[in-house]
Image (cartoon, rainbow, N blue to C red):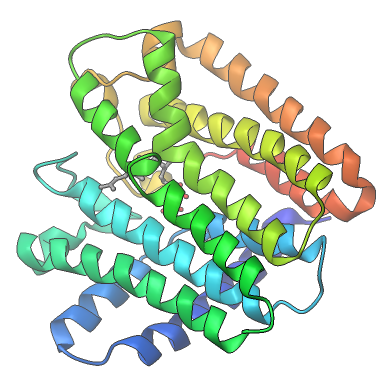
Length: 296
Ligand code: GRG
């Protein structure tokens, strides 16, 4: 299986759905449309939408409803990146290889673009629930998962503790809170929402919970490692910022080699969970292995 080309192909599908849905939801003011489009199509990997779609595929073969949620996840993820890059947060000049949103459109428009992306995500998901009104429970439950992960108990809580921990050292419990909330929550919600929309059974969902928790933590530890030793050009963002701003990261607390070992161990555990699904999870397994070796 060539996972790299499968990912590229799937990202193209997601992009085409994102393009249509953006046009359906906003046409004016021009600057807002341009700013939303700029950040949405700045070259993200589409990991969260792909996780949702590939999880959904294990349980159902009519993808149409799932695409709405895949798009909503990318809208939410993109909003979080725009806000995270703001001068009052991480103050970054580059993201996905391009100047950050506020560098191009100014701070006020960047904040409002994030707000618009977030709210449009809910518009997209509720619209899907109206369209597929024969499955209200699946849709409401998937929306609840995504709302929870995007809120105070998810990425926002994680972001706040992350900011407050700068320059203060910390301990493994705080680090774990940051990683599982700032990054892990939306990754877990992507997998859960895909499974729920596909009407998966309870046991499968609990196996997928464990899978996505291991995956989310491995993904963020690799992100921490890449921030220290990654290639800025490949990553499309400034490297070395975590060390400079004394961020609490896995390498800062345990060292680089321990961080690499931990990422490999978590990836292995994630893959072990997928064995429950046999061949059906082949593509998720390949994705999980691929992410552990990523240099981007
Ligand atoms: C609500 C402002 C606000 C922030 C929430 C998600 C978040 C916290 C901040 C974004 C910055 C960040 C480093 C998050 C950690 C998750 C992460 C590794 C994001 C990058 O995800 P990728 O690699 O990015 O999937 P692409 O560009 O491929 O979409």
